[in-house]
Image (cartoon, rainbow, N blue to C red):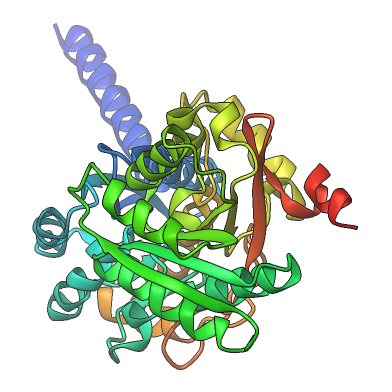
Length: 388
């Protein structure tokens, strides 16, 4: 009886010790979970860019979590702002009131970003913008929560004006949507054109984002006999306007802002109609970056269905910056905000990130053209060779 009791007791002790050892191993390897949000247009007319940004941010999170040297494990909370200001405020409020979310990688659409910055500030939620280009998002306030890794429409406007000048165009018709994004683009492009007194704006036409028939504006624009038509807006209207130009037989060269620089624009028009359209963007082609080929290989290996698109590298860089800051100071919104403010020479996929006194990264714009059904870096295109 005693031997049986001792055997049972001994077995119980061994089991208890094994359990303690197992628990010790788990506690030694377990990492605290930290949530960050991704916010962008995951549905609607510009969803190709939003989905590419979401996937790129998720890739950054997955790579971070696979690194055993990191302190924290991250979860990416994905929120769809639909590129609609009212929806944007709703989803940002949802993220900001969840105290487990320490920071956000947010917004492609400027019209959404400009109305959500107050919410980020009010709740003290740090934001790193990955796509919205309206200058006022960073320069129109002194909110310490707002940071941006991509450039602004000032860069785009300056390069577009330079292109118009170098191409020998003398007469420009401007069409833009009447959101903050479109109006902002028109203001900065028109301002940039003032550097070239031999260039005349023949007409400037604002259109509503719900508008579908542009025949009145296009007919009026054509009466001014422009050498080139500039468009300031997003893909859905860019596609509609270019398609209507084609249908009514207007072959005037068409150029546009970064809002049309995505697969959706070419797919919506078809390769033949989109051919030769020029656009301007604050990022170089992915393969031009030092780690661009590595990024593309990892993105492909991850099995994402959508392309990273033009702004994917910025979403990837924004997510990495945010996570690296949290690694240094811990999951505390106030500490993360202050550490982000001090960002200088942070090495990222899109190059060094340094924030100025309004937490804006300084970047350069680049030119692209549709060639054979794809957006091609201007310098690598046959159009650039013909220009020479």
